[in-house]
Image (tube, rainbow, N blue to C red; front, side, top):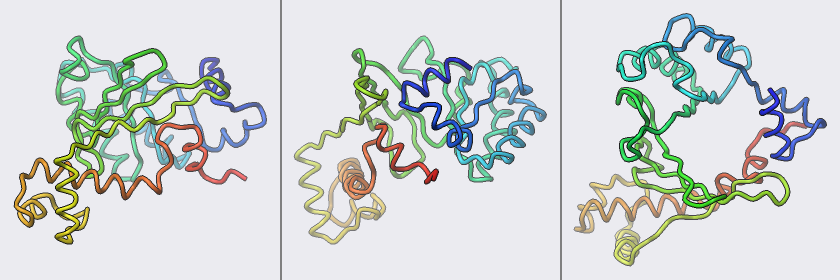
Length: 239
């Protein structure tokens, strides 16, 4: 589609990159599939993923992919049964893009079962033009927690790029707890309950301290999230 080509060109890709993109980027439209809350639709998607040996599937948007009413929990249970669970068993990551409901604090519109199977959910807002803020509103992962934020600013000087801007704010109380944890020999990956008991501090403060220590461990090895250079550094060698 023209809009996909326009976006790729904005990211700095050209005709010389076509062969490499065709190896690693595959685009399909919904009219090629049955709804994904049906056995046929799930099987069709799974077959396509297996054919291309995909590691990541991006679904945009949920409301266009299903035939069941979005306010019914059975619609999303069926989607998870035919799509989410089989792909997770095959170690394929899935990004689901959805629309916000009328009340932003209540998350995506439709049944609450929509988010029942996901591991992490990010709410995207645009506080100012060319600024993007991601706020974690659900996480089952140890690396991210509800309330975590990731900010970006968009640059168009050259290829379109979303550059990561650190949103972390560390209070003095958390800094003090980090010192105590290090003095006690508590490792960053120790359970929060165990760490809190060892130094005699509240679990919520210890949790923030442990999260910050884990973030600091990740930071040297992870390129700025959202930047074009990060994507280039992390993509497979195409030569």
